[in-house]
Image (cartoon, rainbow, N blue to C red; front, side):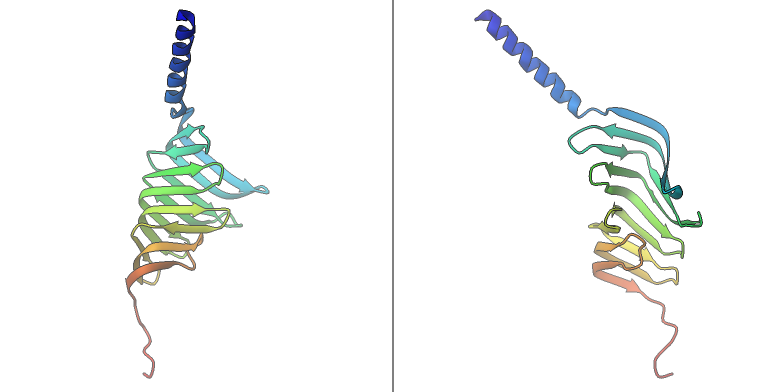
Length: 173
């Protein structure tokens, strides 16, 4: 009976220790610089001071000290960029979450600002449930919540929106 009890305690101790390490990072990388390409064409570049990899049921990479992603067009010119104070990359569904002081700028000069932006590159969409401000290249300003858009920021939609719009032509004049 004493021997059986000792084995059971050891098994419980092993379970306790292994549960503690499941939430521990597997790998930490400093000075991250990743280039994304498709068919030898560079599509983007991600830089971050630190990336922490967690190998859990949905493996994730956390970028706790900031992240910048630069997107390139077919002629290798910068087409957009995203900068945020932190980020999370979900490796299974490939979604990228950006948090705190998120700024997304397009080539034509439109700027998205929020404390959250979730990008789904497989669906080519972006969304946020936090308050959002979009400053258009022409000076128009849109504010709202429940933001959704294509990943080029060409067709933004949001609820409870307000804005300031520049009007240059008046009908009938």
